[in-house]
Length: 469
Image (cartoon, rainbow, N blue to C red; front, side, top):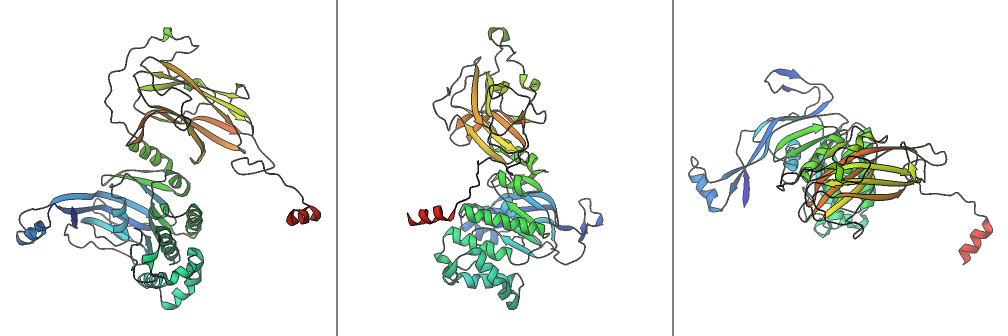
């Protein structure tokens, strides 16, 4: 099946310097903030889908009859990006993320709506896009620089930085058709970031390549952001969105369904990705008196704990519920103020309202900015706890941890899920950031994790003997 862009009148694009002018969604003439570098207003993109190649000919001969089906990749997206802002775009495959970036980059023309950009755009889109496979890496770099408007002199000034960043050595003088996917990314990213962009667009390209080069790229992105470059990037890595973005948006089937803080959007995105479509029987009536516990398992007892975070984010299909948890610090209850190296026991009780197979119990530790620093679950530690329970069962399990953490605030998330072949897992009761712990001050180290580093003075004789051995 093939797609053709639906023919529509050209949409104007403003790339001039100075304040951006246009119309708001109500049609009123406005002058936007001079810090605004991207404005997308009600942009739609439609493709024509032909089931047979011959139908293209029929369509040209009989334009009044429709031989195609319409596929709307974008259904009216609004977006504004300011100077120096980093915006992450998340969504399922086919939600319109790449289409939106290609329109902003000027590669695609929207079917309707308007978009404006302010400044030089450097885009790192599909792997190898814009590269001639027969040209060498050096020739492709020169070609891309000329397309971006750089003179020959400017390119030669940038060349040492490009060569140094990509680290391809002699491969720069070989045709790019001989490159691996990782080498493609190295060259494309090195060229893109050295074109003095005002706007940098990255479409999932950093998912390719080794982890060391990815870290190098993100360090460079941080530097560009400090220089006032606006960055738009598509990624499936929620950690990258939380760490590097000022704001995030989520697309779904061509609609912009949410815009907000990275944490809010990531939580909504995860909910959408792992949303259950299983139809369940009505919940059973449970008599709390049949359980020999000091709490009522039919109620949410977690909210009464001293470490409970009332700003937790809870979601799932509720076939089972986490009804109680307890934190032990070196064997005794804690108020949440712990010390580096403490032994922690995280206990949770789960009440099942339905029969469930293939159970997963999980725990995640995050910093206060949402970045995960540790996680484990019963699927990784197979055979320790039962994977099936009956309606009415009350199950208690414990995660034993050592708090090798440095000073700061940390949040523990607990969850119950069901293993699933296609979706990886289905959320039953996930309680993100439910538990808040604070690690006391540490004077001999900084950071997040205690690696128990030691400083040792080595005398010259010992160093010489070790070298000799």
